[in-house]
Image 1 (cartoon, rainbow, N blue to C red):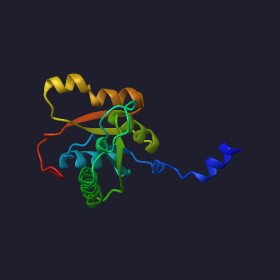
Image 2 (image 1 turned 60 degrees about the horizontal axis):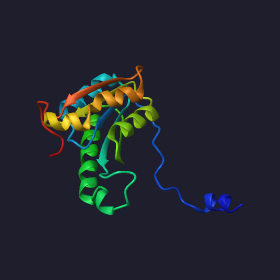
Image 3 (image 1 turned 180 degrees about the vertical axis):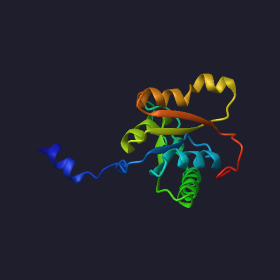
Image 4 (image 1 turned 30 degrees about the vertical axis):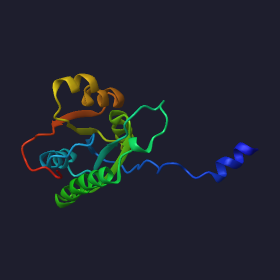
Length: 170
């Protein structure tokens, strides 16, 4: 009885996951999206819709005490929003339909995979961070982690963050 009352009164914690279908998903774990990657995504969509997602990283562990300092700041969220808006602007300028989304998460690979599955994307282009070898060993391979989560039906490609061409935001 009380549990039923609480579920009716309590407001949802997060916005619902967008479900607009997209042929291609452009994803970033917080790095700027190269313009060449956006153009490649529009060409790969072949007239289909394109979705853009970036991850604003939450630091710390899920088992630790909650600390607001571990959440993304307003400046970090504004930076990620400008990255998404820049990519969506290029996609619409090329004549395709685009949707953008900023996700906050501790695990970027899991979040990107969930967005790809929710949107029904057949291809995912991911910005591979330009990091030293020791950092890659600790954090793991983002492209491989996403591919493992979405399955073999979805093609996941990595695009270097330092790709030639102008960056959308720096």
